Amino acid sequence: MVRPIVKDVVFLAQKSTPATKLDAQIITDLRDTLQANREHCIGMAANMIGFSKRIIIVSAELGDMVMINPVIASKNGRYDTEEGCLSLVGTRKTQRFESITVRYLDENFIARKGKFCGLTAQIIQHECDHLDGIII
Image 1: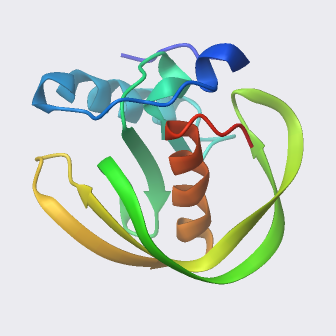
Image 2: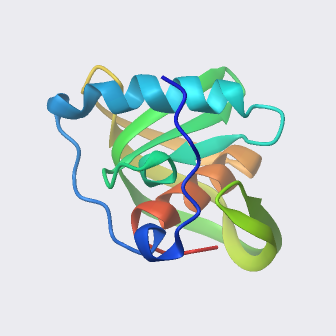
Image 3: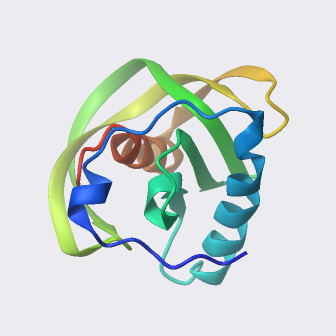
């Protein structure tokens, strides 16, 4: 189901709680909502559609990738950038890392670990900030 984009900064500033298999519908809603906003969006966190759960979706080179309970385990190559967000008006300056290693569960709740670089790494970092209540 396509969900409306949350713009309430008080809600967005709350830390998300770990997701479980009971939250599987959120994955479908994230996928549908990302597809509906693809013209202006390349990643989403569950709190952007009203669920305070640790689930993100990222439009990556090989298609959309779901990460459940992601943890950035390492990061290298700090750089300055500017980002926008569907939940917020305008863009903001921030720092990101060129490459990151992430531990997460895939949409089948299978443990994964991946190394990501460039734009994909930047999107994951932005969405993980959402999960931690960091508004960028």
